[in-house]
Length: 322
Image 1 (tube, rainbow, N blue to C red):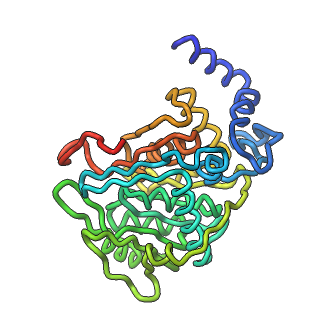
Image 2 (cartoon, one colour; image 1 turned 180 degrees about the vertical axis):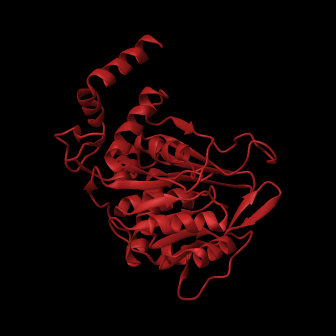
Image 3 (cartoon, rainbow, N blue to C red; image 1 turned 120 degrees about the horizontal axis):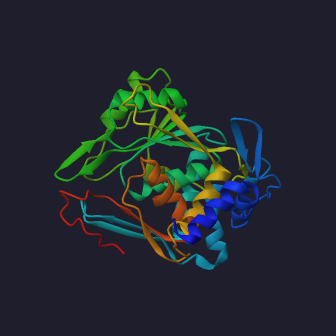
């Protein structure tokens, strides 16, 4: 191990309270935690149990308010469609705030669970951040997962609402998501109240009256809402294992610990400074995508790249959107 890494590892191992207490100072808290680690009930521990925070505020609003409003927050590069989009921190904050308003208008609030079933499009990140803005708990399911696997996750998390795209786009083929979602809801014992569908021009879907709503119509009509403060121990998301070894297992990530650890890792592990461009070649359906496409880079004030394509079989697999 390098000297700097070995020293950091030793400090974190020997004195986790001081180590992570120092790291927590980089976070924007509504209520700064006085307790770093509660380990009075082993093996269950809680980090920053008296802290109050919001992940979306740390990802977007604090940067808008702190002078990075016109810096690029997200670059979308999609060689499979030929589309490219760029979002400043202000523009991304505004879209997330409106989408959060649309979710609140459907009754979504603190503690409600929302399943997100989307490909690598900007709206996937917007949906995640909109949930976080409200204190709702998102559970992202890899786009195109089989209907039965999606149904299992809807049942386990007891989702009130599902956000999905009409289709995904793979090299050389379209993947219809909406029929898979419809079948999953038929199979599920727990029935979501509402589905919000992002209609993609490559394959629009038929909406179910009374249940399905059009993303763009909802967002256009919504009023923006502010971030909702939540306890640091409040779940930010539930992400399921692949399920290849039996019943999929939901991993719950608390909000405060997530912000502190990811912000620290961006600076200390990856060595990137606010304003740098960062790309993680993953998918938002996996934990690396959660951590290093959406949350980590935005917590750190970076420009993150969301790439819709594959390393093989894509017309221009080399990143071109930076």
